[in-house]
Amino acid sequence: MKQHNDSWDENVPYRIKELESRGDKTYWELLVPLFLNDVKKFASMGKVIDVGCGLGFLTGMIASCVERITGIDTSAKSIEYAKVHSAHSNAEYINTSIIDFQHQNQGGNFDICVANMVFHNISNIEENINAIARLLTQNGHLLFSIPNPHTWYKSRKYKKSPAYNYHLEGEFEVPFQIKDHEKHPRSIVYCHRPMGCYHQLLTKNNFETIIFMEPLLNSAPHNNEESDILYCACKLK
Image (tube, rainbow, N blue to C red; front, side, top):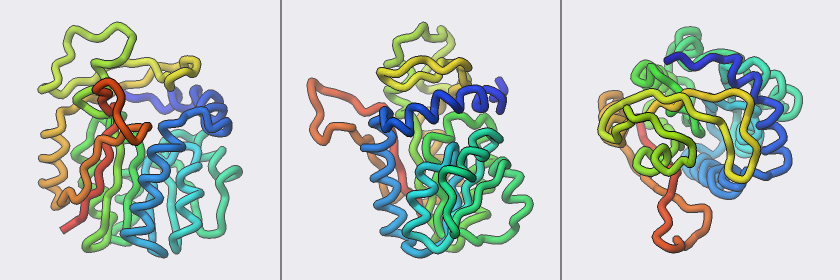
């Protein structure tokens, strides 16, 4: 099942509204602080690449604490917005894929790769993680977030595919809808993988996981609340 770039382009106005209004609390109050904290910890004033940078909100904030940052995304409309609204003298935005960018930029030049809620939208994940490893310097870091494979799909309120099985990889068309917000006009493809699959791919490409978190928006869980986000920091050996 192929993810079409025009799906993301058509959803851009809705995503702009959600982020400009700061209505996506998971993004602003949970994910952004995690990424900013670890970028500062692992490579303050280093070189960063933000893969699947989208509208560039996170990219622009990271720019203030690093030497240089490159944001890439396959959505042309997202990159157009980022170039105007998240512009910084040490930031650049490129409409391209991870694999194509790596082919054009041989050698490890980046200290950190940021991938916020990206990997679950990529079908050829092994090629992409390999490309990221090739872009990083020795001892570079990969910081990424994904929907928690244990909880995310099964907790959605829409009709589930009977083919879903946590232990098996699968691709499912799902609505793009942030909690308490309207549904975006175009659905997206969710590429489900059990956690063990991610671990195997990271290990195969010489990454060591140093942070593994299932963070909650509220600092303390309520009524056995489960996190639907997974956040990881990995170091390239």
